[in-house]
Amino acid sequence: MTTTHVAGRYAGKAAVITGAGSGIGQATALRLAAEGAHVLGLDINAEGLATTAARADAGIETRQCDIADPAQCRAAIEDAVERFGRLDVLGNVAGIARADHLQDVTEAAYRQMMGVNVDGYFFMAQAAIPHLLHEGGAIVNIASNAGIIGQAYTVVYCMTKGAVIQLTRALAMEYLKTPLRVVAIAPGMVDTGLTRGYQMPADVDWDLVGRYISPRGATPPETIAALFAFLASGDAPNMHGAIVSADHGMTTG
Ligand SMILES: NC(=O)c1ccc[n+]([C@@H]2O[C@H](COP(=O)([O-])OP(=O)(O)OC[C@H]3O[C@@H](n4cnc5c(N)ncnc54)[C@H](O)[C@@H]3O)[C@@H](O)[C@H]2O)c1
Image (cartoon, rainbow, N blue to C red):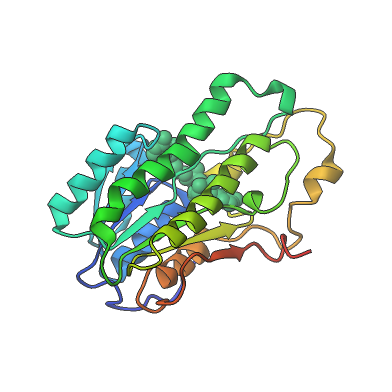
């Protein structure tokens, strides 16, 4: 899918994007680089990162990073500042999802999802904020419609995305008197590796699942990247603390 880039919008800016090896993170890294940014793409998956770098004309450097490990988050931010001499944008995009009956959620699966989807977002933001506290500095967190409405068979995922929304709002308040902006995008279904590999457990009640699947289908990741590029840029100076739904109306009523 093609979307219209705003040439030069990110000229001279530097961004760190997590989850840059696939899906929304990859599309966002490519979009910001195409608009002139220096991007450090992070992912646990080195192969995915190599694909992203190969698809970019220029502007994307990569680093393998497990965002569930706070020390790796801090090291990645320091690395970006050393490479680029500044940091303008943090994109907290990497995330994992899985569906289970509540009683089948293991402690290991619970901790893993909290580690990536909550700890990862928090520790990346904590490390990045000292470098983002200038005019134009922005964090965009990728939440989900699952953070807004309850969804059957994804209790832990819903909890983590609710936490991302509250992380966004709480940071927006704590930094209200600074130039930093913090926003979240709450997508509905997006056509990525995450949804293509999604396995529903046996014996689900499809009526309940149908309540959060849009009849309008999945969104291409490039559409979310286009929204991200707007929100993190100087075109959105008053977007602060906003949770922007991009879900074909699935959380509207
Ligand atoms: N696809 C959807 O329908 C959808 C809807 C709403 C929200 N989201 C959210 O969008 C974000 C991106 O998801 P996507 O759909 O592009 O999925 P994706 O699976 O295509 O991409 C996610 C990327 O995160 C990386 N990742 C996983 N664990 C990591 C870790 N510990 N450290 C670093 N990187 C790690 C993966 O390797 C992968 O490259 C996620 O936060 C997801 O929850 C997705």
